[in-house]
Image (cartoon, rainbow, N blue to C red; front, side, top):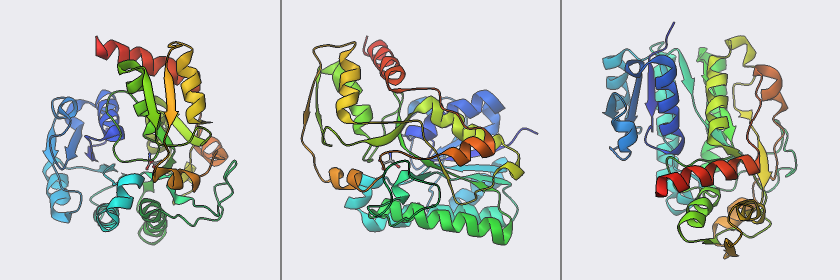
Length: 316
Ligand code: AKB
């Protein structure tokens, strides 16, 4: 049966591409995009769009009832870097929105929920290389704390109330359609924009800061795959480790120089360096690969070639 989907936070980096993908899959009228404002006209003009405040239970519920929604993707969140500037706002948005959606799902109105977690659930005491699914988790950012707590609540609602909630620990996501906002991994998108526009980029992380990353197409595929998988294959109800590749700012710059040999990068680490230093360098996602067949497609040079090609086309 075709699901009736509500995407909350549809104007954001991942929400927007998820909206386009799910509209292709299920038909435009079956995918309701929503956000706090009309901030992404591509999304707003591509089908039904509603203003929904993720912090308001009634705002979400009205929309769910109006369109007889049975599946929610909760993509609204305040990310790691912005969260450090506004800790209480990050806590309120990230936690309240999750509780609203889980509580709606608990009443059986909603059959399935997707909620993104992040590599930010890990912290400075976590093993950094090939970080296991189950390990020490002492996140040091507010964003990471909300994601870790959120994971516990997802598992709790699954065990206690049978809520079919599914989740992935996204790494940094690289895409060209919609800019990310307020994350520590945002440099890996900005660098391509600056390479095309100015030929130079000042990076806010140091040259050898290695972080787990993924191309948007792979992230959307993982999201769709986990949501389409039979419920019995989803053995982890907190959140799955998910990985594709890991690289440093220096390595991205070198991959850009293959096409743009004059491109220059400089380094001026700021407060985001401390956040990046608390996160893993690489992730063991073997459970996702075994349980529901996850596999990534894009490596660093594929991503760079695609990003430069698409941004260059947009620039003309
Ligand atoms: C961030 O940098 O905050 C996000 C994330 C890794 O969850 N991109």
